[in-house]
Image (cartoon, rainbow, N blue to C red):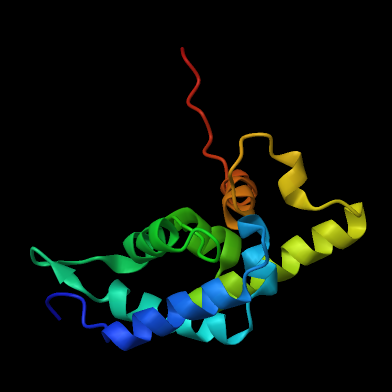
Length: 146
């Protein structure tokens, strides 16, 4: 496929759902959007992932980073190591659901909204989660100097 084949009304619908379901706090949008947002975001991800630019597919990493740049309230940028070792799935929807479930679990256990722990505002819950997901990647063994 060459170029991104996305219906403009589809993109507008996704944006409208995010805007209409948001609380006054942008940071908490991922926890407050209707669950259909995961289906729509995953559908958009699938269209972007297989889009070809100059002979190469954007791929899963590029698609996740593009979505994060457009929708930082709900999307998560995922690198190859996270896809393969942390999340162990090929489905972006599952990653979004896992992120949301883990954020809820962390907040329930700590009784603290995660965004208040981040002092560099403005931020979103996916950006906070991303730091933790990157830290969960397997560490490479360092070569010792002889």
